[in-house]
Length: 440
Ligand SMILES: [Fe+2]
Image (cartoon, rainbow, N blue to C red):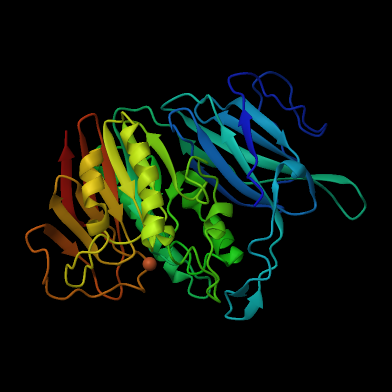
């Protein structure tokens, strides 16, 4: 596999680009004017975490085969001043073919094979200023049918670097985005907005970023599903840190690979062998997040590899709080039976993990403080929810379960300050269904 190309970008200087002549740039700090903003040729732009989100952010995007070069422009949102940029050429990208000719389904229900060969770019913004909001956009050059050079621009994307003592994130999972059933994605995106509204009412400020715990696509092999999902405003407005879920890891014909998730994102390449850009770790403020791939931990060999890596990352971090995330559930929410918790409990205790986040089961479950707090998200698509039955197991350690049955929509707000992490479970109406605090 070809390695993703990473470009470090210099900041706090005037615009570094020697851009095409048609960019108007009259002086230091000006924002270039883009002649044509039709938004074609560049797609699936999304912001991923850098290893240290106070100074680094990554950008993932795809460009059509016919582009000749791309320009990434970065400005500070408040001052609208250019703080950096970069010119990228196709040979610096990966020619991505992992989704090409994959059997799939169109929004109108028609069966088809994905036509998806494109340049996959991954950029790293480095030396960013902490606690700062940035905007960026991408301009691509291509030649039209008369061989005339044309330019198109992406929309503007926004992220906020870590650095505030108090910050918050939306946590969501399991919306199985599926264009033939578009209401799934609508339900999840509305839920993200519901969490944001609650955050504003609660702390006078919206959340800073989104943590997703996997199964955002029904079939990760369907590039058109990712493309449709990334066109949603929530992906323009926030950095999203995510996990590879079992659905993201599969195609319609059940071809399995973590490449579907890898090439749709630009996560830090600090994971272990075979999992680079899929398993990764990053810090946002005072919290270390260790992101695992459940699909590679199904057997004992895979689990041992993941645990060796996770232990090393956790033990070498001096972050105030340590959070580990994997897609699979800690408990079977239906009856409370132990699931992945059994495999991780000792390691979490040994490494001082404060919070373990899971998903997949579609039933929200929260444990007592053991001392690690185990929480798994409900689903959020109003379609694939699961009913719960009587709590038969772990009555002494499960503190709360929640589901709305088949039609479930829920997500969480995570609020962090110097000494605590608070988690609030909200339903689609913004009503609090559960609340818990982890204190140091
Ligand atoms: Fe799921």
